[in-house]
Amino acid sequence: MNARWLLLLAVCAHAPALVRGQDSAAIHQVLITEDQRFAAMEFADTVALGPLLAADLTYTHTDGDQNTRAEFLRSLSSGALKYRVIMPETRDVRVYGTIAVVVGRAAMRVEADGQTHAFKIRYLAVYRRGSRGWELMAWQSTRLPT
Image 1 (cartoon, one colour):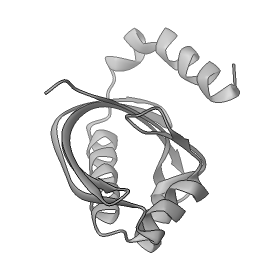
Image 2 (cartoon, rainbow, N blue to C red):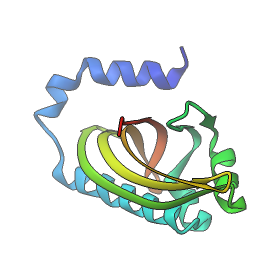
Image 3 (cartoon, rainbow, N blue to C red):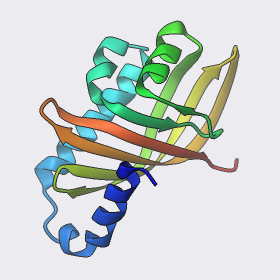
Image 4 (tube, rainbow, N blue to C red):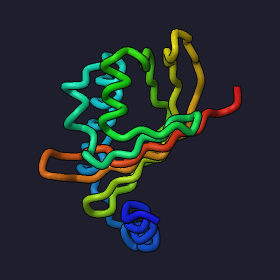
């Protein structure tokens, strides 16, 4: 098990005590960061997206494919993957110091391999607050049945 998952498990073990003191300003900043990230993905703006992604990002797509930060940015800049619509429907943000966990649901329209796919997802996003602000360090999404 890598260090990232051990950290997440440790944070979750202390969740009940930490949730009581939620920082509404931090929650707001995480949501702003997520909205900026989604917009940058829709416009394939890798310059804007880059600072919102941690250097050690693990990005897991709905089909189970996994990308590093570099691979994910490359798929967007090359046009191999195009996010046409990312519309969050629900989001629950929990902040634990410098880590934030977002559990959400979103409607997506994505172009991959020349085909357009529209679907809904449930996702888990883990952010870390660094010197540049919040950055995505892990993403895991599951396609919901239609």
